[in-house]
Image (cartoon, rainbow, N blue to C red):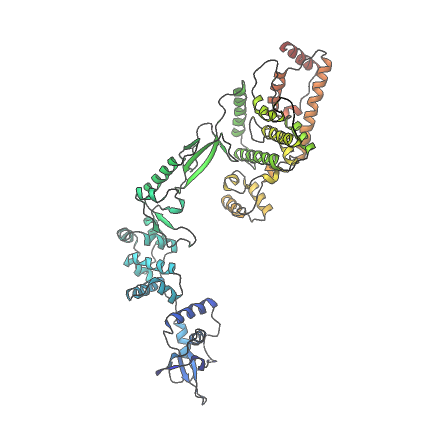
Length: 585
């Protein structure tokens, strides 16, 4: 047996070698990088040719020879042994059978030995063809208790998440926890219990809104999480109180106009002021802003709207009656609807914002624009006060658009563009899909469908909106989006959120087009109302319409449109209504 240097190109491959399958490109790249960095550490084993030739046949090290040629080496060291009777078959079998990858503990010990000899982490990474991050991750094992390292060296390794928690803990804490959970001889360690006992709350720098000045003022020191994904900011701190204090100070210093800092409830939701309604669409200038910290300590923003201070007379009774009706509906057991009340509120906001965007920007023919203006004033949220008596409420809202049609001499003088802008502005003021007194009812949905407002609806594939859908509605959305439903509702919702992250989702119940039967019923009910009014006027000769009664009937229609469909007035009732109206006049 001797060592000599030869040209690797002069060596011949053994046709009877044990490892016949080709190695993977990744393994070849790893060995090639090692050869380029440190050369061939273990010389290939060769034997002289037995058929009378002067060359050498490779017994072990075919990949090393092949990759040495690929690395451009002119000479390599080889170990020359006597030719075996079986052409090296048994020798190759033994060598390949005992090979096994190093466990992380042995890798760490080898890295620490190289560092002690003067190697840098970067040089070790190049020699081993590993990322520098992996080298630093293995060096974290230096923070692990030696008794735990001995258990890991036996092949009993924790998961990466558990190892990260253990390495981040102090030696004293590790010693106490290991003493309580040390396994018996021959058993595996309960790494889950050990990691759970060493877990500490982490507040990440990526969730912080404050800067370095507040971090220094509150004594926050960032620690690099080497186990975090490479494309994320893995810095964290266990100083939870300091982190939350810095976040609160930042919110106080950056509080917007009409803003407030609110607390969260046990479910992690913000506690808005009493009677406040959350705004899910675009906030207006009069809306309020609430800042709060979620469970991860991240600053979140939510907009809400407070009710108007002055309410029309009689509104309290209507609201009280509506509340009683809702209470009865909740008390009676029934199947959960596809969309909850909160979901309908969100849909109303989404529709109104989309309708207003379409009225402001979508192309609309002049004839259609004038028709929509007539349609808008037929909405259930529109009220015109008589000039004979009473108080004016909503007049100023429309006069600011009407004054644009006058010149400096007080005469009507406008062009088509000015008229279009004024009509669009009035339509935006009138038409609304928001639930409550401002809802225009069927006419707003008809108008939205006519001008293509569906294209302006936002993406509803968010966690907040999908929480408002029942299991049946979620599964129906999965069928439309070709998403496989999951066994649990929570998992199905998460799959839909992930699917619609880069796509646009509009729930079928949020589209503007009203159902055909509801539209026909509305048309019949409106036509029947006109016929009854005309008949009553013909019978009553001097019958005078009372605006107050029209207004009251209008609110009754908003409360229950179905009553109009079933209205059947007798002649006697019509005469009584006529006498009441004359008495009121």
